[in-house]
Length: 241
Image (cartoon, rainbow, N blue to C red; front, side, top):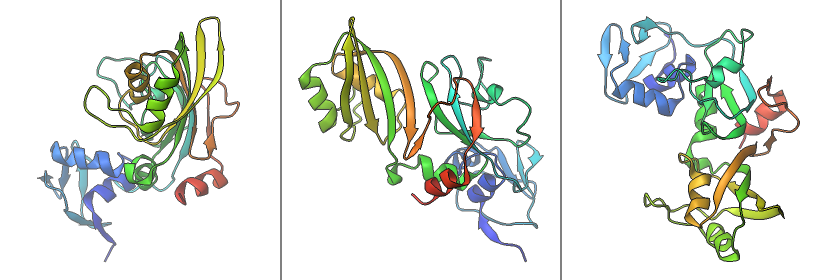
């Protein structure tokens, strides 16, 4: 008898999606077990016995796990495929990675910097789930400046136009010259375009945005558009958060 696991965990083990996104695939009716479409959460399957399919294709747990750091350029979307046929971060990996990997979280189309990619669903879940409060550090170049009052609002937490209240951010001015202000900001949430919206809310416009670290993992001198495998030490640090 094989191990019995929840369906969303099995999907993550197959490298199809994180557990969280696997729940969406189930709800959308894209997963079947032994030929029967599954749309409710909580179904369990037996590894090695039950036949699980995604969009009609059988999936099996991935044997080799990949953990990748990418320095994403502006102009790439953080998805496996894009409905508008824009370049995706997968295009930057080339032919070396044979497994189906996917982004851990995302970076906006017009944001560059550190993006993690993997086929380990449990790893992706740990990094992206809000309850783990993993810090992400960005360097933002603002057109013009930012007021002391604006900095204070960001440090206290600010309500965005959609009603979302951000947690207190760590913010410091790094440089101010020639009508541009460079700011370092650290947050642990990951809402769509959150950093840009936060600065917009205090009257500052982001002209450039780059993510330089996730938790203790730093982008370092990895060239723009290039990628590397995470070291075993880096993987261990992230898994033990």
